[in-house]
Structure formats: structure tokens, C-alpha cells
Image 1 (cartoon, rainbow, N blue to C red):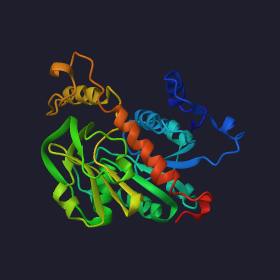
Image 2 (cartoon, helix red, strand yellow):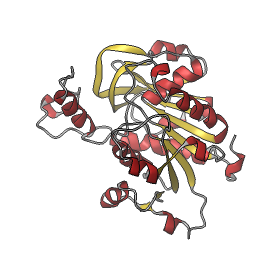
Image 3 (spheres, rainbow, N blue to C red):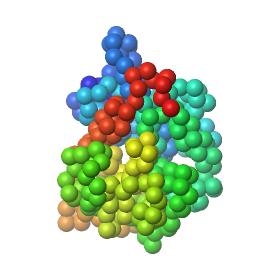
Amino acid sequence: MPIKIQSELPAKEILENENIFVMDENRAMHQDIRPLQVCILNIMPVKQDTELQLLRALSNTPLQVDVTFLNVKSHVSVNTSANHLNKFYTTIDEIRDRKFDGLIITGAPVEDITFEEVDYWQEVCDIMDWAQEHVTSTLHICWGAQAAFYHYYGIQKRQLPEKLFGVYPHRVANRKIPLVRGFDDVFYAPHSRHTETPAADIHACKEVTVLAESDEAGVFLAIAENGKKIFVNGHPEYDRYTLHNEYLRDLSKNLPIHIPYNYYPNDNPEEKPLLQWRSHSNNLYSNWLNYYVYQATPYDISEIK
């Protein structure tokens, strides 16, 4: 089944060229189906790239998904045009009375400052609190996961000696949880961050269950409240060239950066990067949509609490 998006969203043509079934609102109106309502709080700087990556990840299920893009009103985006935001995004004030089956909170390039220094921190906290009674399951990604660990459990992030940058192996720690159903014992996922939520602090939090972690990259996947809150400390949604583009960007700015770990064949940036994480990324999003959204949400969306 398709994902439902606005007909003029730029990602629509790219997804169709990849043979991914997308449906615009005009066609969806003629189907007698209750689609899953998924909201995406996109606080990444280049929003179109993240839109494409997440829509691609959400497309690999038999479920029809109706996507709403959410933006923070307390921050002015410099990498995405106001026209794009006004046309395809909404704010929390405009959807405050709505219910959603799922919510995704993305990462953000603000990890080098404290949470309270982020100009939209209070708005993100407001959205997380709103989700408690308006969303069946929330998936927090990278900085979004760090923010949730801090907001809900008081677990502070810490600075890393150098940027964690590359594709790292992770081990499944708890196979009884459906979120990792179908995962190999060891799987790979991209990371790109300067901070971490310490693994020992996550393990010490009784409300949270760790599902997968890495010796190098720490806790990758965790769950709380039977899946109402899910935490992903990485970027499984990244496409083949995302780390490559970030590497070239940092080089052009003369920032301290090393070649992404376990990414280029022979560590040669001239070679095509290896795509080693797509199948597990698809599996993760499919499991989330199936077990924690579709099977957990009421048919009458107004009954979500």
C-alpha cells in the first residue's frame, strides 16, 4: 500500500522514479480505507532530504500511511525556503486538537549546545508532552532521542572526544521485543554526531529497555511504555550518499573530520559508498508501523490517549 502525500511535494516524483507507490490526496479521497495518520516533526536543516529518506522508509509496508509534516515556529530555517515550509508544513498550534497514530521526531544539528540553549527547546518539549495524549507511538531519532531521554528521564547527553561518524555494527540485545523481529544478530547503521546519551545511564533507567547496542556507538535502539516511546540513537533512514555529503561539507568548512568509518571501500572517498543498512532500516520502520502503530492504535482515532 502507498504513502499519501501532497501532490506537489518535490519528493513525490523522486519516489515514483524509484518505483515506490505514493498516492496524492485526490486519489486517496476515493478509497474507503482508514489510513494511518503519521506526523513527522522535521527539524533537520535540509528538510527535503529528510522528507525523502523518511518517506522512503515508511513506504515498505502493506499499510496506507497519511503523512503530515510538522515544523517548529520558534526557529527560522535558513536551509529550506519559506515557500516550501508554508506549502507543505504545519505547526503544533494548527494540529493541537488532532490525534495521530504515529509521530517521528527527527535529529537536529544542535547537539553541541545544551538543550535549554536551543531556541526551539520549549516547543519540542511542548510537542513531546502533547504526544503523550495525542499519539499512539512516537519514534525519536538521534538528537530527538537524546532530547526525549533528557525530557522524560533526566538523562543528560555528553560530548564525545571526536565526532562519531560512519557505519557501525550493532548487536540485538532482546529478541523478545517485536521491534527487532527479523533482525540479524549483528546489523549496521549510520551515525553522525558529536554527543551521546551514555549507555550506562540508559541501562540504569528502569523505564527503558535496551534492544540493540554497539561497542563503538553505544545504545542504538531502546523502547519504553510498551512502545509508546521508541528511541533510535543513529540514522537508519540515511541514504547511500548522506555521510559522503556530510564528509565533503565538513572538509569544505575546514572542520575536524575523519573518513567515515566502515563506509567507503578501502576507505577511499573516490569509491562508491557501500549501502549496508537499508534492509534493517526498512525492517525497523516496518516493525514500528505494524506492531506499535497499526496493531496498537484504535480504529476510531479519537480514542487515542
